[in-house]
Length: 85
Image 1 (cartoon, helix red, strand yellow):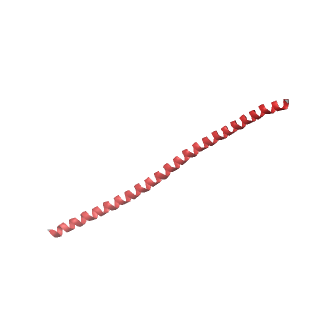
Image 2 (cartoon, rainbow, N blue to C red; image 1 turned 135 degrees about the vertical axis):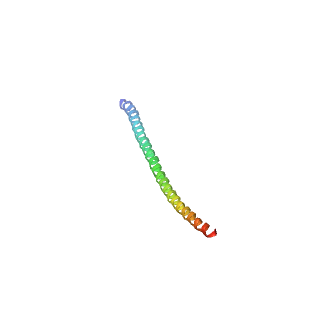
Image 3 (cartoon, rainbow, N blue to C red; image 1 turned 30 degrees about the vertical axis):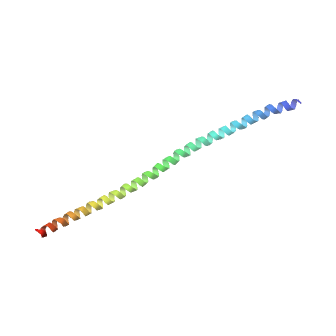
């Protein structure tokens, strides 16, 4: 009969230890997920920055092309105005 009373508290203690172990594991996973979330956010920001840089480079190239064409148009208009006069 004494043995039954000894096992009950041990079971309760083991259950609490098990629950604490699970809590520690969950805390660890929670911290890991926070780190992964931060890393994911950083990765997404880096990806978006790269896309933005590419878009800005494309815009700069097109602006240069437009400026060249504007210069060509201005030159041709000058030549045309000479012939019209």
